[in-house]
Image 1 (tube, rainbow, N blue to C red):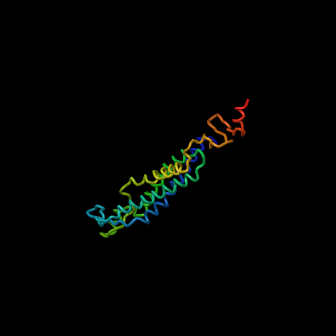
Image 2: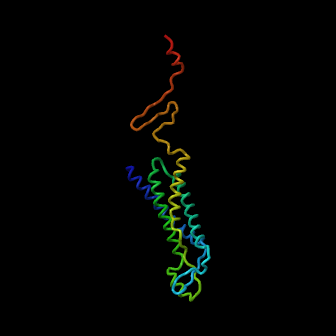
Image 3: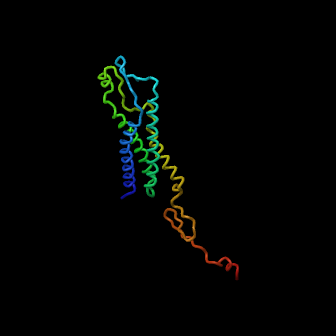
Length: 198
């Protein structure tokens, strides 16, 4: 299998795996988010409690879930990745993390009434709990950004960003550069002293 095809497969598997994880995480977010109640006021849907902090808390809890998912997926991708798979893995973390976050948002929003206005009209003046939703939509990028950042951090910490063509520098180990290979050996003991003798 060519390197390009292999890289494409790694990217696709990484993207699909993270995207699928977004569905249960969206349900977790909806279950964890505080309830937000609405009422119908002159045919307009408004908050039942205008002073509520529930909307901010809902965004914050999504951000926590997305950040945790990003850090975990970045670490798992690093541990599962093989040699020379860095580029497709990083691309997969970016695209898959974004897809997972968007699917989490969608899945969490589906847990509420399909039509909030209709539900409020049927409630005859009573407050109705709305679906989980994001006000600060920028938090969806937490997952892909932190996934890529964690992968890069682990690369730096464990030295995998060092040039892979360089040898370890030890005696009797090959020193390789593309297309050329040298083999360094220790000189026999006493060779330097012999050079000074007639």
